[in-house]
Amino acid sequence: MCLDYPTCASSKLDVGNQQFSLSQFNYGSGTVLSNSNYFLDVNLVKATSYPSNSSLSIYWGIAVPTNQPKGTYTGQNTISAIAN
Image (cartoon, rainbow, N blue to C red; front, side, top):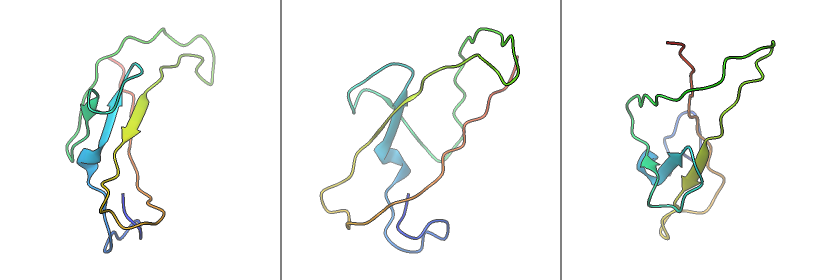
């Protein structure tokens, strides 16, 4: 995340400050994001309509260091579903 997304030439918030989980969590106990792909094996109920009526919640947390410059930070996380 950065102040001038997508170029990100200015202040950045490290990807390692973001965590996620498939259940509610306190920051520090989630899975830490990294710059590489992360594959998460989940079992979703097969959709019975279009658009899909199958869903899953992903909980997100972010830590902003006290020395981080103030501003509106923007970024992008990509989540893809792959059938197996």
